[in-house]
Length: 133
Image (cartoon, rainbow, N blue to C red):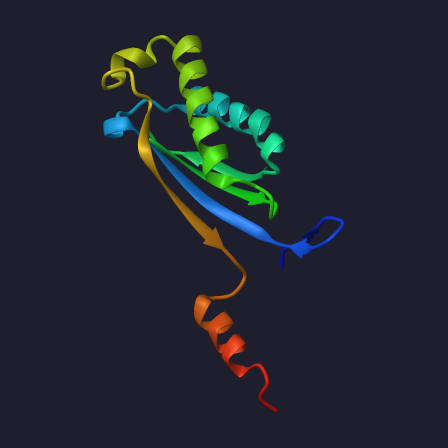
């Protein structure tokens, strides 16, 4: 079981699975580029109260598991990350530009899934049973 995070006023466990896809599914990731993209993530994340838990890639997308704080603005963070990583990766690895479609690195969309220790049905059942003896 995962340990809970806390601050002065709350205890929480907010974990997410993020999937970001390269525009038009262009195959640009290898271990080096993924490693740099991960480094950029780790550099930006603390400013948003986010901690990287796990990172992996395929040729055209990345999977990220991270923890957040209640105050974390997830969409702002994701957009800031995508913007910074796109700019830096294209600058540091100019060969990427040949593979991209119209200079765009990331697809505008992303998939963000909350993760938890129990299923939605278990939580629903727990809430429904409150007040019963």
